[in-house]
Image (cartoon, rainbow over all chains, first blue to last red; front, side, top):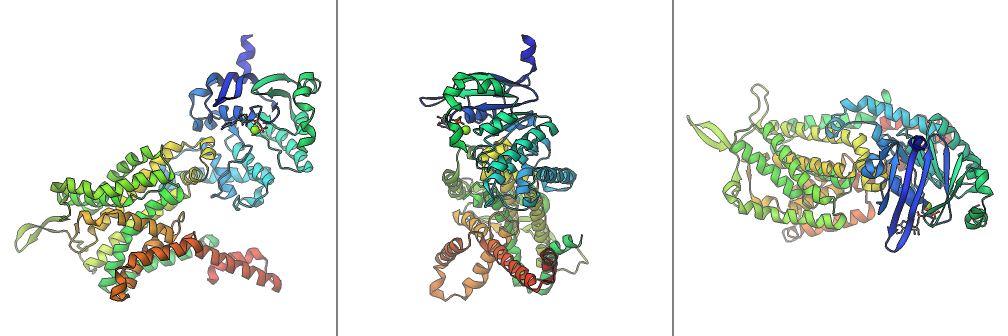
Length: 263
Length: 359
Ligand SMILES: Nc1ncnc2c1ncn2[C@@H]1O[C@H](COP(=O)(O)OP(=O)(O)OP(=O)(O)O)[C@@H](O)[C@H]1O
Ligand SMILES: [Mg+2]
């Protein structure tokens, strides 16, 4: 019993988040094993993004605990999350319009690099680190087929491209856990298939654990090792894709109708 | 390599011009340009804070003043050298900036502008309060003991050129100012192009993106306030020494001074390195060259004219002079592409590489 707890990478325990009278997460608990792709699904407003924001330390839960690799995440400030091995993308994009695509991706390397104001101002001490970061960012951009946008600004690029730029940025910190919030939204059918294969292959290349929030059921079923189903801020089911597909409660709560709504 | 050189060519030319300038101009112009440099440094500092980091300060005139008084007191009372006193002023202003930056973490946008406005408004009154040390509105003369008619006396400090250099006092002072100005601009340029600079822009555009990427938003903001203030302090220190008989008074560091820096940043182009310098020059030209030419009855309304021009510029080109330049040069480049495409001789890439040389 102890052992399985020790093995899990992320442990969410009885988390409650309220917005005024609204309970966005009402005692959510689940744990995530290291190494697979786990999908978090549930109808709109189930609290999936809220959970991501709790793990990123953007929202403060009123009760509960979150541990990551044995460490109490709620004791850390938001900017320490990335250096502890968790990276994420956003449902509604959080890019920096004032920077080039390359610089946006390079920002992701922040937790892996060093140097204060004085070192930066005198340029010399940080120059080789800067070159390494740039080379790495260009590699990641190329890996995601984005290299031709490196010098561009984000403004005006297609939505799907921007989502991939965010993915590139999140990979720059070499995360142990990657949180993806609806990466397939706004993509065409063939783009979704491509994204699914990209996610599985980068998971292997970067040897990460992926927690995926996605409404696109085709993709969820094909890439996931396990699935957690949420409804109204709680976990209602958990299992392999096959188990979830045949779970009566899940079908009632979720799988029934939104399938048409998403495509 | 050659591409690098071509990209740098305009800067090298500009540096050469700046070095040769005082040898060609009369002393009026040498003195005038010398006076623009402190403004440019302070505007550079403000631009780092406002343009790059998105924190508005209407209080940089006060930090400019703090730098001026620190420099004056270090030289007159503590017998420090010019360079040491200016570095001292930058350190003092860094810490003042950090102190202002701390509450700025909790307040944003308009509120921050109001708080810094209060700092700017209170500063002359604080000087009056400590008029024993600061000289209040009468002012403070920056002096050092000098041999005068055979005896040691307190005389206004002067920039004595090194013997054998063949430079006049004003030329030497120009070079002293220029060296400090160039160092400040190069340091800020490096800063902006670094990891730290990226996080500044990220904080300005999207704090959540910055924090999630591991940027300590609070500390970066406070440090930026400090660095920006240190630059204002260096500018102020130089401004205190800019006149032939260096003297400062509380009347020189009013809210107007703060607004001039904002004007220089906006006119030159926010979030560009060279913008504040161009803004300071444009402002200097307006004040030192254009204003004296105006008919007497119009002179009183120069602030009004300046304000009007500012509004027109903001509406037509929010990127300031640098933004205008970038837009025009991009248009020229596009036009050349089209020409060369029609001619079918060269690929666009080769054209891009040669534009630097053709301009
Ligand atoms: N910052 C906030 N302020 C107020 N209410 C919020 C906030 N964030 C989320 N909520 C509410 O919490 C509930 C859960 O929202 P959340 O965004 O986590 O849902 P979700 O599962 O991600 O849904 P979707 O699939 O639509 O993205 C919703 O009712 C939402 O309106
Ligand atoms: Mg969501």
